[in-house]
Amino acid sequence: MNKFLFKNIDNSGLIVFRIIFGLLCALEAFGAILTGWVKRTLIDPEFTFSFIGFEWLQPLPEFWMYVYYIVMGVFGLFIMLGFKYRFSMLMFAVMWTATYLMQKSSYNNHYYLLVLLSFIMVVMPANQYASIDAKLKPSIQRHSMPSWCKWVFVLQLFIVYTFASIAKLYPDWLDTSVIKLLMRSKANYPIIGELLQQNTVHYFLAYGGILFDGLIIPLLLFKPTRKFAFAISIFFHLFNSIVFQIGIFPYMSLAFSLFFFEPQRINKVFFKKKPFYDAVAVTIPKYKPLLLALFSVYFFIQIGLPIRHHFITDNVLWTEEGHRLSWRMMLRAKHGRTTYTVINADTEEKIPFRIDDYLTKKQQRNAKTKPDIMWQFAQHLKQDFAKKGISIKVYVKSYISINGRSVSKFIDPKVDLANETWSHFKHHSWILPSQLD
Figure 1 (cartoon, helix red, strand yellow):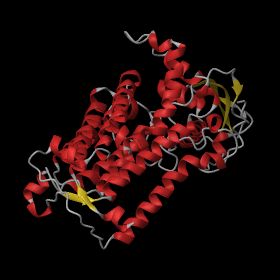
Figure 2 (cartoon, rainbow, N blue to C red):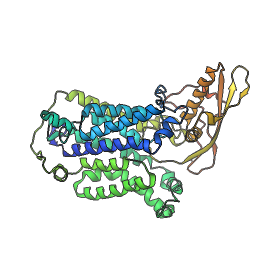
Figure 3 (cartoon, rainbow, N blue to C red):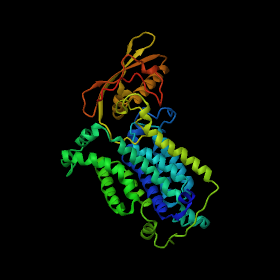
Figure 4 (cartoon, helix red, strand yellow):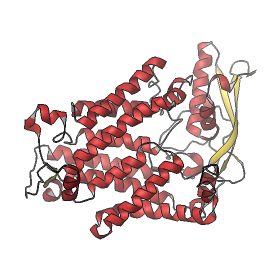
């Protein structure tokens, strides 16, 4: 075990990954401003649906939210250049995590992955070559790193892809219902739009997605299949970039290949002047017990979160309980109609209100189908009316359809959501039983 984790290996892959990672972080931050994402998601809403428990995390006033993202982008550039690396990486990790937790309207598994990778990168010795830090302080320069630095990334990716593959093994994915619905909105794409509506393509994407997610890490690890797997990865991630327009993440996923190719090849391609480290040395650091304990707990949580929905009543596709942080990517198409009724708790009279006064159109779409957001909106209404000295009850009538099925009643209309409590690991009885087969 000591040899496996603490053998010194060439660090070229990690150094190149740091440069690409920092650049992509900067592009993500600056791009969020230029595309209007910051304005739509964090500035325009009257309030944001944070992760439950993090309601205190709310966006800064308009100008300062832009400054916040500019600062994040600058830290991304500092990471790329290896300037004040540990501080810059930690600050980006904290700032990105804060923006992730303060809003769920644009929830994305890739944003969650960037949270995890950012904190992993904090502990990596990624500034020991080709960095301003190493130029300013030559004593930190190294041509090697402990082997665990590579295997942390490999294990993290294996968890992500494996759970993504397993999650697809259910009827609506296997009969291509989900893919068909996802592709329907792409029909107006030039050149490929019509092709994406073909049944043959739907089956190719559905079963190709399962096989890619399930096999890509083993195929990259196995030298005879590595080049083939990398070629498939290029097609897969570029396809996702073009069709689903998911920002930097297809390119970051391709950058992970640096940890699978031989260090000699990475060194030769990217650092022709860098001496290649090929010595045989095992260095056991003093921090070994802390490191093993830290990553043992971390990976235990990473494995536990995606399976927690199995211990919660009913189907996660219906309830959404245990859906987030579980690598359940693009697994369902969900729509519905939902109405909120506000009742004066003292007089039992109905209080008229306009949902447009509280939520953006995008937030309203989430408030129609996601139980946790329904509950949070009820809590927000309760707090808002309390400021006016009015005690209220909030009732929800909701009917939803999953993957093209007929509409079914979703929420118990007799339950006052404003006075319900939320549990992260238990089923909520006001979510009516699933109508899924």
